Length: 160
Image (cartoon, rainbow, N blue to C red):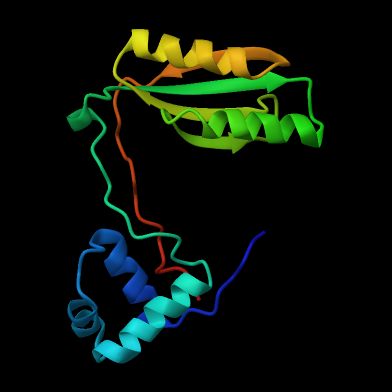
């Protein structure tokens, strides 16, 4: 469901700043956007309540954690009923190495992003996935040679 929240320039500045550093205190954030702490806190709470801010998290470096292989897995299926989709979503949710999963338009039905240590680790994930999900017609994997951009902030400057 697409939403177009009513964000003013201060909201957009808050969002831009916390995407770069969510560890700032409310007081520090307020100073950067020209507010006192209480109005800034209320804006943060409103943005969270509206679902604009889903979570405040740390962005980890997969390679620093030994997860140096990124696989993109394109999946095709001939199963499109709701029960199958629920089972597929549940199977994907059970695999922590799958960090993103998208239902696609076009020739590919689903696209998964998987972070693993090496090819043997990927193979274990692949085997678990195909064992848990019936009705897969094609599972094609490609592997990233180099991560050029990742975890990029959402451009909030063009909103409004």
